[in-house]
Image (tube, rainbow, N blue to C red; front, side, top):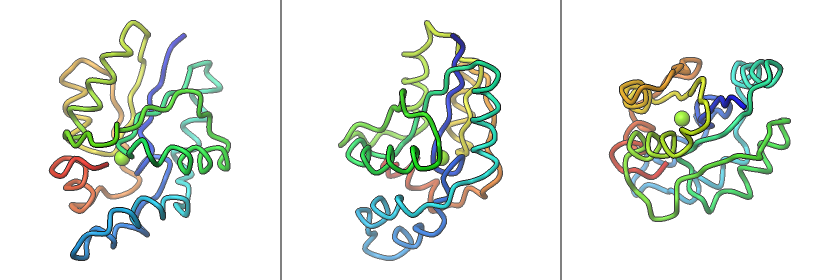
Length: 157
Ligand SMILES: [Mg+2]
């Protein structure tokens, strides 16, 4: 089966309402993550998932959210009708930049035919593209400097 790989935050989930937890000092990472249950869904992202499912592709998720947030993440996804059979999350205590982590996971899936990888982080997209993967940049939510730092510099999501 062919596989289409989706990021979550900035692709199907709108994180903007909780970014303020990272913009204050000290940063409140626990609140930032726990508030994810209240993320509005992004209609463009949901439509893309439905489109690729209808075309017969398997859907897999590759998120920088930490593993400990799995129950909340799966509940949220199910509430929006999203499949959760394959969901890879950032291992707890793994703070490598998202671009390193995600390309490593993509490579580990490679015996399977990954036809597209969709993410909103320009650094992740650039690295995946350089590694030979077909990519689509999610541009429907502006990717701000707060999230960029969280994903690439601090390596926490
Ligand atoms: Mg993202």
